[in-house]
Amino acid sequence: MININEVFETNNMIEKENFDVRTITMGISLLDCIDSDLAETNRKIREKILSKAQNLVSTGNEISNELGVPIVNKRVSVTPIALIGSACCHTPDDFVTIAKTLDDCAKTIGINFIGGYSALVSEGMTAADELLIHSIPKALATTERVCSSINVGSTKQGINMDAVRLMGDIVRETAELTGDEDGLGCAKLVIFCNAPDDNPFMAGAFHGVTMPDAVINVGVSGPGVVKCALEECRDADFEVLCETIKKTAFKITRVGQLVAQEASKRLGVPFGIIDLSLAPTPAIGDSVADILEEMGLERAGAPGTTAALALLNDQVKKGGVMASSYVGGLSGAFIPVSEDQGMINAVEAGALTIEKLEAMTCVCSVGLDMIAIPGDTKATTISGIIADEMALGMINQKTTAVRLIPAIGKGVGDTVEFGGLLGHAPIMPVNQFDCSRFVSRGGRIPAPVHSFKN
Image 1 (cartoon, rainbow, N blue to C red):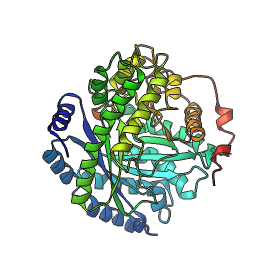
Image 2 (cartoon, rainbow, N blue to C red):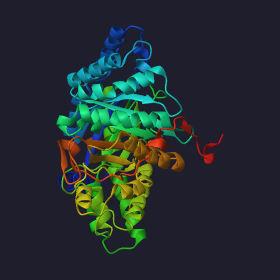
Image 3 (spheres, one colour):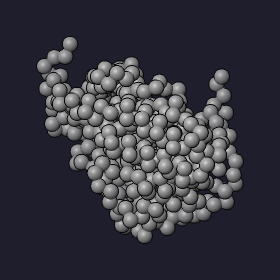
Image 4 (cartoon, helix red, strand yellow):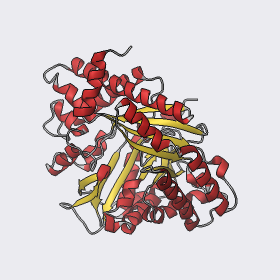
């Protein structure tokens, strides 16, 4: 039973602490849309998405109004398009037509993003995978709502360094084609190690091939709620600190569970997972960095930051798994720079560098996220940064990701501006020493010894 105090607590979280259900994401399988004819494939994709998700936005709005819980985004993820286009796409431009179909579907049903313009290439690339990857810059430059992700490594398979090297070129080309928008295309492109099949958060969402025909995944976020809870135990020891975070995460997840069950029932689509992720926004008071500072750090990036983030991530997950039997996705804490005002402040104060962010990614939910870098950064340097982050994921058996934004024509001291959820970011300096001979060797970095667990 829910008592009146819990009702008051939830209302307070919404009204004063920036709590929200960040997204309801419907995953849709497009495997039955595969056809040898490109036009027919596009027709089937359009028909499938519109038939499954036509009521997604209206249903989300109805639930939000009835429960009084903000549901900020409604989104769709689809089967990796490299698979769907493998029989009919013979050039990168063929894949771009599918990207435009996805974009049109997103606009028609009223969602803000559609994910799954993706390829899974951790052990090698098919011809279709390579064509899709080469199409990404044009696809992201000519669409508004399509998001792309490439999984280049895993703990079981190692790191595909040919794909890592190629993605350095793709990130740069995407930045150049969207240079008049501060490289906005790169904000919709993620490179993964150990990508999850059920992630509801963009830009990395796709519908895994092991999933049902359609599924509802819900992403819940509440950095402001956690920070406010910690303000009540400012001088307490670590045991109290951990209990406070865990109990707060439990409450947040229960709201997400209710929303997910209602959405599943009304849309007639199975409930998949709750992703409890402290995903910040540019709004003041909705920052993961502020939580770390509330724990006792002068700035995010100070000594002790990695330990504080590890504690936060672990307690968030412990609270979440007690509140729902189906917690998945990327659950934990996100540390994007451009979407978190506290992180931006830490960068501008000189407390936070890319190297420190890389260390923090060992214990957070994702990785180097929404980081603007100088526009003259070499493609091989970008590949080297990707390789480092993929190695952290592979060795530590966790998901890691890279979302870098080369700001063409800009350098350290300048800022990129995206607005809305994507926010703005100061351009961070990048190590200028060369790694081109390393990333250009080709082949695959083998899986670590502890991956052999059959």
